[in-house]
Amino acid sequence: MVIKSLFKDDIDRKINDTVKADITDDRTVWQELKEYVVTSEISRELNRFFGNFIPALDNPRDAENENGVWITGFFGSGKSHLLKIISYLLGNKQVTYEGETKAPWEFFKDKPHCEAIIDNIWKISQSSGHAVLFNVDSKSDAKKGKDALLKVFVNVFNDKVCGYCRDYPHIAAIERQLEKEGLYQAFQDEFARTTGGDQWVEKRKGYRFKSKEIAQALGTVLGQNPEIMEHWLNNRDDSFTLSPEKFAEDVRDYLDSKGPNERIYFMMDEISQFVGKDSSLMLNLQTVVENLGSYCGGRAWVMVTAQEDMSEVIGGLRDQEDKDFSKIQGRFATRISLGSTRTDEVIQHRLLEKKEGPEAELKAIYAEKGDILRHQLSFSDANMTLKNYQSADEFVAHYPFIPYQYRLVQKIFERLREVKMTGGKTSRGERSLLGAFQGAATSIMNDAIGVLAPLWRFYGAIENTLNTVVTKTVRNGDDVLTVDPFDSQLLRTLFLIRYVDQIPGTVNNRSFPCLSG
Image (cartoon, rainbow, N blue to C red; front, side, top):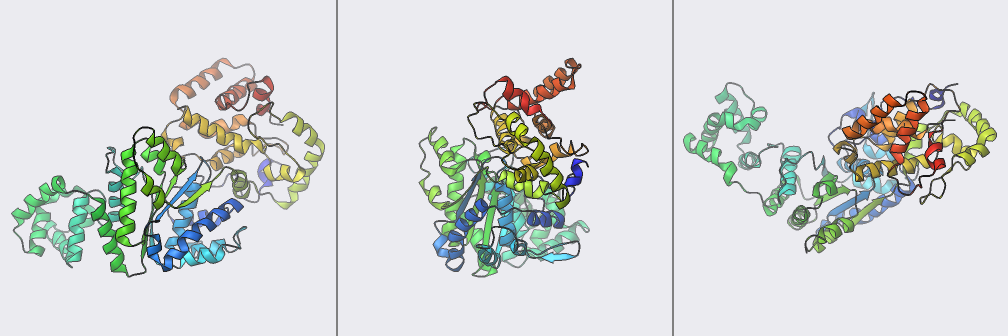
């Protein structure tokens, strides 16, 4: 029997190992909802969120000064996935896949740890609201100024909520005004007639190439001189200004047009990486959230994910400049903190669940080799908790991995990013821990049962994110170390744990992670 025959689901099946805000096809949404693991930690944090959020559904003014949610967690903790799941619940859009249709909340009826929160999950899904999920970095332009975050908010609102121009706020402002006057469709029809059939939404991004035709259409529907319209259009970009107040007013007008119970949720992934050490961007966020709260009366929320806790971000910024961030701490009153304790549970549930039959064979292996495994697979004098197998049931649950690998691989990824050994892909979570473990498992899936996944197998999961000087050095090492394949495996192991300071560099600590059985 080979390793790949152990699992309930194919170990090499397509899994969305990273959560991307802009991928929302039916298959992806269905898989993300179906396979989402609600741990006891997640259940507790969701309950905290519900405690602040649900009362504001009936009394939105209660959230006027507390309209923010800050989700923090280390790399691989699942904060982006949680934000996306909340967006599905708030949006409450039914999803259909392979002939079956479900509302998002229905996926949680039978999940573990959901018994106490399922009523609240249902409640938030029944509210009327528009959830706008996006990665803040992907929606910003290359030049960051003090209004960079405001521009992201404005562009996302114009595009994803209103259907206006995504790239030019001044063009979106024209569209908004035309719609207020009931002339937007007439303008689009006139533009199509003037251009011989061009569709406005397809051509507006290159509006400068169609300025005469746009001016002609505007002049016709507004009863203005086309030449004046053209001059005004060509100079509006330079004179157009953005402000948090005007943005909040536009959001309020949109909510009012949808009815008194309408809500909007701006859900931004990876805000801390975008802000970095720029205090002006954090102050920009503070002003935007504050204006949304006051102008919209608690009906507009901002939910973000960050690698650091808010106090850590603000503390780091205060070290550079004496800035007052007291308001934003009050606005983001709801704070969800995800640790690394859920990593093994998620990977076991989504990747490592076993068929019933092979469990007996695995337990027999542990009965014979358990003492040897516990003795050989132990770090010496490590300054971090690195668990070994404690029972036959644990061996079955984790196989072909060792319990300490979940925390160690996560620490490796974090440290490589901190010491600048990786490029932007890893810092944005391009490769997740789930993907790393799947890659390691598939690399040995045709081996006979009894083989373990050694640490060096995880190198392949991050190789394409490493800086060129690193990969070149490793490959040069392979060219030299040609006598024994174990030498190349040891080289990769040494690189992976090189920067994990909590593990002393003893011979034992460097060699046994290479063992595969």
